[in-house]
Length: 437
Image (cartoon, rainbow, N blue to C red; front, side, top):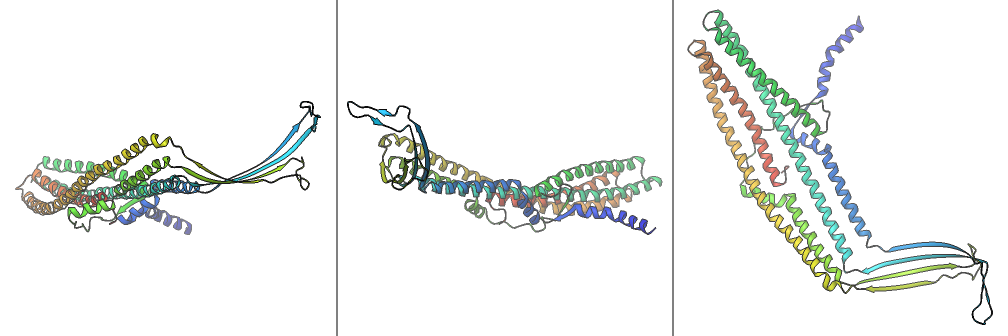
């Protein structure tokens, strides 16, 4: 009996335990942090940075001396080992011969017109571009989380208002049925309330379906279990007061990753021009070689039967033809640099229009809230008036339903407007290149 009681208690507590495990209260800041930490796109961006750093290290390695070592064993069979030249005594060669030859060479490019230095500088700049790409991806991930978070919040607020609406309709339906039983209203009035209840129930089903879709999408973005039900906090409690349009323009031109990338790419193009010009310059190199020659046929030769000559060398080379064949390459490199500058100017205009649009949209969203707050007050007063008239059989059921519908629609619109204003603010921040400011 005790075991059954324990099992029964567990059975009663289990649904609550499971619900607690699958529900997660998240603030907007916590959601952004989770999204950034678990983003697969950001991990790929970091991998690109690592790849760029590896290329930079390889470019540095090109400036190091090169060294080569080899060891050769050679065996020769000499079947015709007697050689006569003219009338001289014949030369007798051995039937076979063995030799060991080893070489060790070290070479260093002393001057190559600066091409190695330019290659290293170009790679370093491209590494900075990769880091800016990662920063931009982080902003995109943060905004995607914010957008989905606000969308889920809007759906939940709408669901809450619809639930209140259904509760109110149920109360009105009971009242209409009571009035009908007393002969105060017609059956048609009862049917109208029932129809309204059915329509609002359909709306509730659609909202719940949207909630499930958005909740799943947010779970994926945050990298948490797909069965987790996220309960967002109200992100629209403290709507921000924005500064001037000019201030956001200045922030954007200082922070936008794309603007910084254009500046870096312009530097890369400048380095590329210098590298192309370096083709017309001579190169200077030094080298040292060590040889080991052992013709004795023995791996460890007797004393005085091997030699170890050493050589030092210096070389200067100059491809004189580049003095007249390289000028078109320089022209092409300058055209590419000019294209980067033009792209930056085009993008600057796009940033201006984007910030202005987002700034005006936020101002509009704030003004909508003020208007909707006034409309709710008016709709509430109208709903009270029609409720009183309907009870006194002065207003029709249609008038009563319309008044109630207007009130709850105004409430939904206000909640949506608050969330839209919050999202519009973060959209404005995103266009400046820094959501977290």
